[in-house]
Image 1 (tube, one colour):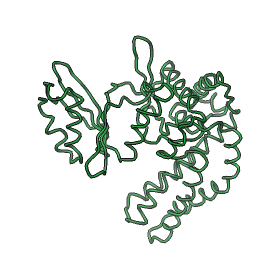
Image 2: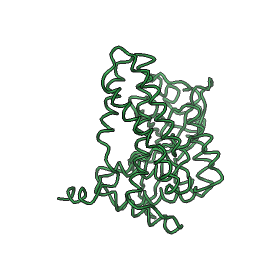
Image 3: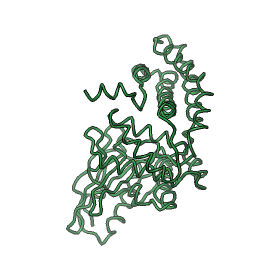
Image 4: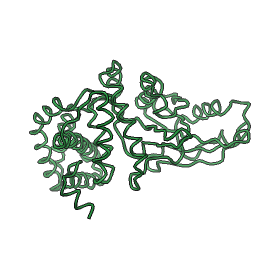
Length: 354
């Protein structure tokens, strides 16, 4: 028996714990296994849905990550690990999914992953070898799935992060903000954001033409390429890269993923990282557009994400009158103000190095 397993996460108020405990028992060796639960660690304190569990099993320490997900996201993650990535020979480049189980009411599901250790890509203290390995893996992902027959399935279970994502988010954010104008405590931030969204709406045809001409073939997108979702693991055979947390896996132009990855890096490091991606994809005949066009494509992705961030606090204001939403809208407004080209111009680069 595994001591403590029957009381796992007992104080956390989580649904589906009986099913999760049964899955863990099976993964850790079934009723034959002898050991105990050593530690529970909350990895996302705000969401209370991701935990690191440490067990001593048959004299060995075993660590796993358990994650509570909405059913549709759990299905998407399972398809990534068990169907989509294996279809192009990239199973070992995705999450180390060990098993999954649904809560009986169908309100959520649990995934159990191997713990990959403290190997997240550190974008504050850049290791060029690790960043290079990561961007090469991202390039291979985009190449392998360009115009792939499974993209229809990905789109069905994910979404479209191309120009439709930009268009829909700008429209939905506008609808929600217009409703905020009727609130008695309306602030000037609503007017400023509506003005920004109107400008983005007017720019839609130009951005759509640029994406159609220069965006390249549609491909599978990770959709959330922060450094914390990129694991670069040292092995005896060199660095091994895994991309985790595919909650936003979708279809769209590679520029969406590239911009997400690059903006998390110091501006002075982005050019060489992009060049590694360019060289990797050029071997397959891809030709990236010049820097001004790339900046336009990257900016389109950034604006789409910012518009998306307006929608939820605006809805919370209209429907529930929550006070924190005003602060959230002001924060998004400042993000618009601070937005700069992903690829800095040469004078900015020189200034950063002196």
